[in-house]
Length: 112
Image 1 (tube, rainbow, N blue to C red):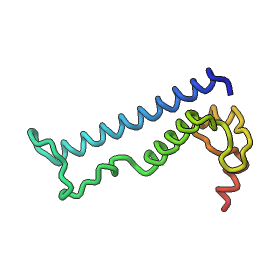
Image 2 (image 1 turned 60 degrees about the vertical axis):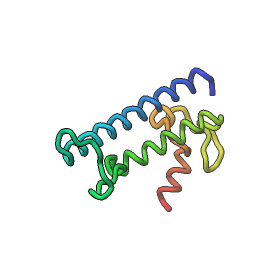
Image 3 (image 1 turned 30 degrees about the vertical axis):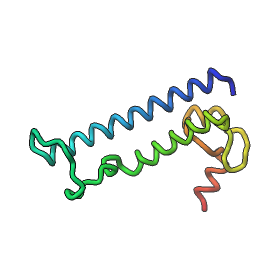
């Protein structure tokens, strides 16, 4: 894959990652404000607030997929199916830049 194409995917993935992290930070601020009156600024574990729960499971999963795709760009395997080793079509990567499998392998995985 050409370097300018990789750079475009890299930027898209980073933008999406930053958006998700910003949403998490906003959720954390909201939780903190709801729990503590003005002037208090610590979320204590005893209050039963799990900071990671501020992101729904889908967002956490999405962050993991994005981080994996960024790592694939870094190690030179981006665009290669992790299951069968074939090249992932550009149309699929444009739609889902974090795709780690080709459509065929993804469908096989979904059926099992």
